[in-house]
Length: 290
Ligand code: ZN
Image (tube, rainbow, N blue to C red; front, side, top):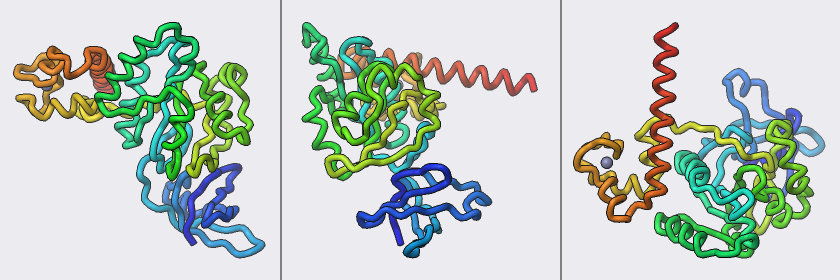
C-alpha cells in the first residue's frame, strides 16, 4: 500500500492512506541504510488488520526541513508582524532565501495590522514584494484559499502571533497560544511530535516552535538563485560569476540604480553575501589550523 506519514511519535509512524490511518514501524534495514522516515514522506507500507504495519520503502523527497523534521512541503507561510515586533524586512528576506533555496513556495502573511495607525508604509512594502512575485497577505480569510491541496508549514519569529493564527485556522489543534507558547522558547518544542492536520482541504504542520533557520545557503551562487529578481537581472551581468558587488557591467547594480530592484532587498542580499563570505573565511582558517 501507499500513503503519507502524517505523524511520528515514539518510534511509530502514522501513515494515512485513502482516508484511513495506519500505525506502522520502520524496519531495521532503514537504520542500516542511514535512512529515517519523516512526517510528510510518501511511503510503501504493509498493514494487516489487527496488527502493526511496516514501512517498506520511502519515496523520493521533494524537499526537507531539518527543524522541525518535515519533508515534501509545498509552501510556507512566513508570518511577520506589522508591529510588536516591528516589521523586519531583513528577517523576512532570510526566511524567503531559505524557502527559495529549498524550493518551497513562500507566502508572506502580515499579522497585527490592527496595531498600525497608518498602513501607507506597509502598502509600499507590499507592492515591492508583490512586484517580485510574492503573495502578500494581511487577512486570514485571504490565506484560506491557498491552503487547499497543499502541505503548508508556518514560520515566524517569537511574538508574531504564529500560535494564535494556527489556533484560529484549526481550533482542534489546541495549541498553547501566544505568549505562553512563545516564552517557552524553541528548545521546549523539539521534543514535540510533528503532525500534519487536515485544514481547509489541505494539510498544515503543527509546528508552533518553528522559528529557527536551518541555514543551508552557503555559496554566493545559491544566494543569487534565492533572490528571484536578482537572479533575473544577473542573467545579463558581464561575468557569469558576478556577485553584484565590485564587478564591472553588472546589470543587478544598474537595476538597483533605476529602482527595478528594491534597494532594501539589495542591501539584504549584500548582508547575507558578506555573512556567507565570513563563514567561508572562518572555515578556511579552521582547516589550516588542523
Ligand atoms: Zn552582477
